[in-house]
Structure formats: structure tokens, C-alpha cells
Length: 179
Image (cartoon, one colour):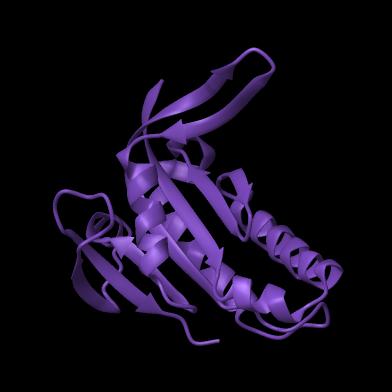
């Protein structure tokens, strides 16, 4: 089924370098803390679609939020994630996280055949959110300008980005969240 959805990608910055300096069990503990904290935020308004290495993909669907304000919820969750991850806690040191956000049409449903099947979203909105996340520095949210307009976000810097695999530049808003 095709729906207009919001997609959030959050990725730990410098995790490859970090994993070179930490024992595997400590790296796994840090990633598990990252997954747990992000999941607690995302599931309030969305669905955790995937845990991919050091990255989380969240989906925001209109029926899952009060008054269908899923884009507002997605932006609010992105801010909450950066505030949570950017501070030291009793559970460990802060992690630098970059986030990408987009909104648009996607196929939402089950893909795959036989024994290997997965619920997910497929479409340009997913790819664009992933590419926006890839250009976000630690402590930054990079959202397509459409997301900023819908959620009435007026802070940050408006940028035009040439994203990998995209035929046309994308206008986005870069927000830095102080920890």
C-alpha cells in the first residue's frame, strides 16, 4: 500500500573508529544503549523499522499520531534523540549522532518471499532520508525543507545539497542541537 510517511534515520558518528579502540562487548553495550534509548523515543509516535549496524530507521505514519501530526512528532523525536544521546549518563558516555528526515510517498508493507519476509517502507523518501542522515554531522538534524515547512521549523540553516544518487539538488534545513 502506498502512504505518505515520515522517515527518520539516526546514525552513530565515528563508530568505526570507536570500535577499533573498544573491546567488542563494550561496543555492543554502547550500541545496545543507543538502540534502547532511540527505540523508547521512536515508539511513542512511530515504528522502529530497522536496526542497521550503528543506525536506526524509524517510520512515522499518520494514523499513529494524534491528529495525524506525524511530521511534527518525527521532528520532536529527532530533537529528543539528540538531546538524549548528546549527554553523558550513568549508562555511559555520550554518542555523536546525525539524523536525516524526509516525508513523502512510500510503499509500506511486507517484502520478500518464502521464509525471508520483512515489514518495511520502500521509496524515494526512504533513500532521501538516508542520504540526508549521511551528510548530518554529530549533533545535527538535516531535514528536507518540506519537513521543516510542515513542522513549522524556522531555525537552523537552509542548504542546497547534492546527495549521492539524486538527480537534482535537495533543499534542506540543517539544525544543530547543543548537548
